[in-house]
Image 1 (tube, rainbow, N blue to C red):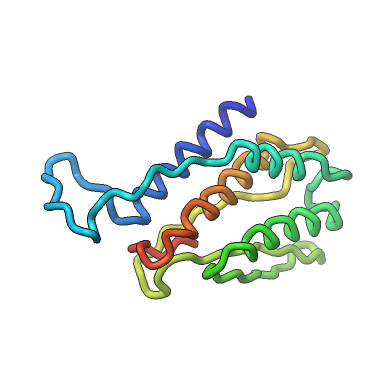
Image 2 (tube, one colour):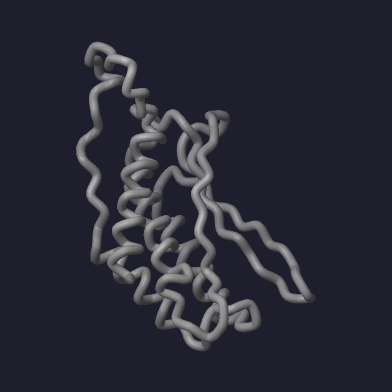
Length: 163
């Protein structure tokens, strides 16, 4: 099942890369003449070792990262934040919220123009119950982190803001 989620994450990465670069076209339109602004970007390849390492880290947290295990959730959030902070030009922010007297946080990264049309990509880092959570949702977090790593070098080429 992990392989399926990694493949889905890679597919999502490819789709978002095309959309964020503004290169997605309707099949009915002919491509414009090649210019420096419209030349295809080099192929992007997700790093399978990084994907695996991110899933491994998140699934190894004990106790499981469900809503009552705030320490495990904090470690997962710190891992995500650290990965985002390693991306030059990215804007990292936290959104803290409370539920049932407990404090939680969303970790956010923005790439691309501040005022561009926005594409929101998300994954949750908590789990349901006392499971390791590879499919709930460590594989999606790994895919999200790898998507950010792949999009970050495009910098000013991004036509959309990706959060």
